[in-house]
Length: 313
Image 1 (cartoon, one colour):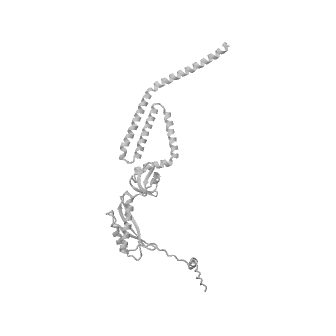
Image 2 (cartoon, rainbow, N blue to C red; image 1 turned 180 degrees about the vertical axis):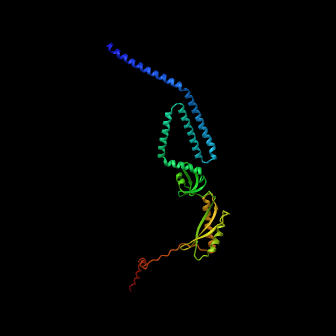
Image 3 (cartoon, helix red, strand yellow; image 1 turned 30 degrees about the horizontal axis):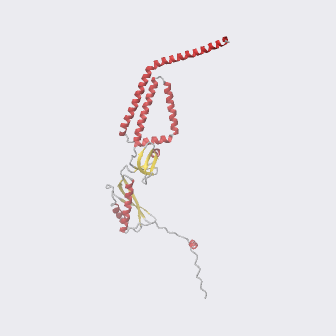
């Protein structure tokens, strides 16, 4: 029995000894490689510390200098963050190069490219709004506080973010229009010239004296408060309507908000109506004449009433 177990025990001890020897050689090899790589590790650590310092410095510089280029806080934070991440990535690649990990660098670049491509397809609408927001902030077709019209919405610009443009309508609603739609579609900026023309449409009867109409309307408009002094109002007759001769009164007012335009138009309508009433000028209302055939009238006519019954004697 002892002779049978002895070779087996000696075989097991031999295998354990070989494994221990291999482990020892591995640890010694790793130790030697660590000693050889120690200078590179120190250099990599220094590069990493310098990278962190450079990233923070670039972010601080952009935060301080960017307001001279644009007043958009969202764009400033975006550029500062992108510069911070970019400096960190450049420093990371240098660290990997110092540590002789070129294959890791290649794998990281390939992974970043694949991830960027996948994200681009998945979030293409968000990316379009994002890029459009950057272009709008840089081109500045409007600023916060301007009154604009875009995508059938008119309102005061309250905020321009990197995704939406926030408009406060005259009725109080807040509309958030995607930047891509603002960038791609037509846009009207009512505030950029600081003046806006007010058009008031009206009409008079065919027997009215048009010279008198013009003079009375101009006199009434000149009494509207806050008219632009360098631009005179005018009256233009536009067409022969069905029941009136149409004309348009045009004048300019300083414009900063939608209330300036609405108030001036309301005041002009009131003064024109008051002046026309005083001058005996009639503003006609639409007249419609209906021609009904006699057969139809007979059908619509009520039946004749029965004659009253005569009392019996």
